[in-house]
Image (cartoon, rainbow, N blue to C red):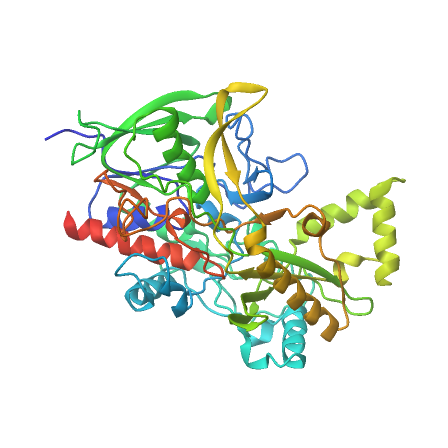
Length: 535
């Protein structure tokens, strides 16, 4: 039997990789997690303009910041870069997909009933709970008002959040954002956490560890069971070790670059099994490069890169001239209106009370106030005049929605005209099959704005450019029943390559129309369980 450096190498530490690493380490497997980003802490989260905010694809050894913003021709995609993956930048929402989501495009054996025990397991691990009634935000009450006026009152509800709350916390006491108001104690996994102080900075790093990022639960448990996490290790390609190139128990070699210390140092390690969990974009790109650039995985499905979805993400900022909304106060999201049954214009929609990180809002304010003139300051003044308030940001509601889009995007490796020797990740995405869905979302946001006395400002990035941005990319390594209709099977194993898996948002074969983190984690729970059971 071949000797390997590890039993399992997990590439990525988000909602798929963290779960897999945890369960396999608990089962006694020697697990290594390769994470491209840093291990962030409240002391190292980027806060100032000069801090390392962004990940750079071309120079990750020099610029390995908090967030990865991929810009394609018609779509921008935001992803987390660090130990904990997408949990670092998500808005805490942990919801289960609707039963009807599983009616189409999923492989046999996957439905809401089969996933329910795994949904429950994720909720327990991440201490999922709604915001307490004594801590409801102005955005919550605004959304509730709009829902009731439009006849959607029964569709309005709190959303479950992966946040640690203090039931006795008073959000009105000043200064509410001071961490002296948090309560520190060990969570169920033995990790010290604080309680929410309503700072609004969920998406850019919780300063008191009230947000249940994966490093505080799944990854902490994995490390307690001797899993090793190596930050700043960027996977480059995967290569079967057996002569036939098919895996078949022969294991795999993972080639990576160590991007720490300001340099790129190539290396490689072997494992009997490899779990790719680098997110929809990262996992798809890694497999595309392995097949099309390096030729190490030539028998990957022709479906690789296809069926990509943006999960219907859309934000409409609405301004209220005489109403303080305080979008930077409280958890980023706490409630939703469920229109996923197509009640509004026949389109499945899920609308949430979006927020703006307090630090981001203050940064915008200070930068604009520091300008003596120019177009940006004039825009701020015009906006203030239009909304009849001195501080438009404090009186703004960022209506946020998700929907079931057409999932018609395709990721592939192309070339740049000015660097034809280099292969780069590109995307084909046509907005037209999803145009009706986006327009219905805008109309729903406008209806809520009108019902509550606000003035919506639909982003010209859509109205003029037909450009979108999503923090919830899905697909690219879609599940299927066979290699003809999918890249992986219902447990995440790659067709034609036994022992190679994908466990993250890349495997979802369609948009689910609401926050996908819990579904991704539930599928990883199921996939990891299968590996443990089969040995």
